Amino acid sequence: MHELDPSSWLIYGGRPMESGDPLNVPPVMASNFRLPGERYYSRTEGTPTQVAFETLMGGLEGGRSLAFSSGMAAVATLFHGLPVGSTLVIPEDPYHAVNGLAVEGEDQGRWSVLRLDLADTGAWIEAMPDADLVWLESPANPLMTVADLPAICGASRPDRCVVAVDSTFATPLVQRPLDFGADVVMHSATKFIGGHSDLLAGVLTVTDEALYDDLYHRRVRNGGTIGAMEAYLAIRGARTLALRLEKSMANAEVLAVRLDAHPEVARVRYPGLPTHDTHAHAAGFMRGFGAMMSFEVTGTGERASAFVEAAELINNATSLGGIESTMERRALVPGQETMPPTLIRFSVGCEHVDDLWRDLDDALTATA
Ligand SMILES: *Cc1c(COP(=O)(O)O)cnc(C)c1O
Image (tube, rainbow, N blue to C red; front, top):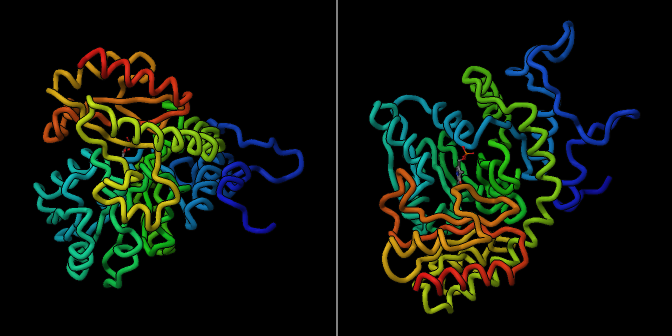
């Protein structure tokens, strides 16, 4: 078969292909398998459902995938493979649990941490000769900074220096960091890939076989494997990712412009707005600008809370990437106290754009 468009691969990839097989891999609820055989135990070889999800994700990102019980299980498995004394380079404001992991390892003397501005491409490239792991997150959660991924991931570096990208906000349809030269791409499949706010899952995808083997064996030892039910739900969600993303990105583009013009909104952070600080990076390589944005309402933090609570359609909830829109006041999240007090992170779902706009406008007006 000819190479499929990613939107077709999402529908085709990871299906059982023998005659008589079900069209969709079922959740194979098994820890143990009859011997002798190629499968031994689910923490080692994984369930057929897990492997199908990994096949789907690997084809999407252009590498080999390993699925985990959460995004953080995937990140921790990568970080904890660093030799003691390593140098870890992370963004100034990474995803808060990634920051927690970096700080914990630093406090234990496992590694030293260098923090860089995601927008400062030169600083990332300059750090590589002394780095063991370069961890990028783009677009960043929740400030929406976009790193120049082709320039950074494509920079020449010592073999020792692994470049990894948390691509959760973009999804594999908007950017493929491995194509730019990254060694690892990570997704919290809890978000857009699952897409229905009903599971936790994480994925690492790599191109290098030795790195794959290392991560595979570390997952066996750490035990952060994905459950069969989660893998099943993740596949089921991913089948419609292209449809969901098309709709939610189109909604986001409209809503970002309207919010930006609203008198009760002080600032909108959306990579698709020409006024966004790293719009030029985003316009250079992203295929669309994603369905995530942040905005600051006018007034105080209390007003921002009142606004989030006044919305009736848009759910006040922390997670993101679901078919249903969610928003939250980010400074209320433990570990995010330094975020601007009126910053609202908004995950744009697939509702009708006019209903979303009316909800936003009504809640802004009611709390003005
Ligand atoms: C949610 C998230 C994570 C962590 O993923 P979990 O599935 O919650 O463990 C990591 N990075 C980003 C950007 C996220 O949004």
